[in-house]
Image (tube, rainbow, N blue to C red; front, side, top):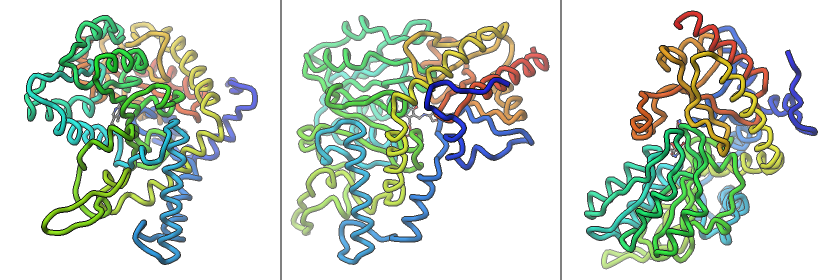
Length: 413
Ligand code: 7TS
């Protein structure tokens, strides 16, 4: 098999050695993990950061004056500064730790939406959204009598910008848009959308669950009002995510949840709230996973995001060509401007059967609607099979996928 040296200085085999799980076998075959859009695997530095915290300095943060509490607080706040740099925010006050993208979006829909939306106001999303960027808006729209408008997509799943422009009006109060589609990989023209929405006074949230690991993110250049992403899709742990919000916008928003940590002073005659970002972090946070998130972001920054992107793009280009050569296989979202996600269908074979038969060969892909049922409905398909690539994937693994699919076709086609 061809040895992979996709880029000069990018030693894929040393990188693979940093991920313990890649050593394991599935059904007696070496694991080929191509479900990275669902969650990425974790390098040892992230796993070690978790165990180091629990075995070395486990303590609750912010309140204690003892050594362990100080160490844990310092590590926790260190992640906040690392996140700030990672996404180019101007202040750590704008970085709120959440459970993930889903919670970030719910926080904004609930807190901002409840305080600002009125009957007849319009919220714009797109057909490409993950359910987590649809349902919170449906809920707040129903509560406030607001109207949810949906930007259509082309047959290939591309955001129809002109339709968006026509939808925009003085009634538009909020636009919430996915940066890169988890189902198809297509990248949306977020900068143009943000500028156009701002021209009419609407705020914009960008769902960065998929883009944050593949694209360079600078929230100040994008000028988005909110940006949400998840730790577990970016080589970090599950159960932790980030919501960026512009300071002035966050300051004007009411708290999302009440409890410890988010208060300044509590009395039975009234409570005053803590300053940013703590106003939005009620209760003991996910200390261990926040601390380990720093290790993940440092891992990415250490390799260089552009090296990652180049590697993943090589995989995407190679895989696209190889998959297209399979008779009866159709790539959905076959466009230039996308992240390393390939969704496909094979004539006459159910995606679920593809997933099961690939798993028998040690190959993990995702099948189904990918939590984007309205998009699948628009494209007239029940679902797809999806291969999504990360820094540790190789050309050999794509060859294994192609071989696996040919076997599936032979069995069922
Ligand atoms: N937005 C997008 C674009 C996503 O891809 C996902 C998760 C979410 C939001 C929600 O993120 P969470 O971390 O809060 O769950 N996407 C997927 C996926 O494609 N397969 O499994 C989860």
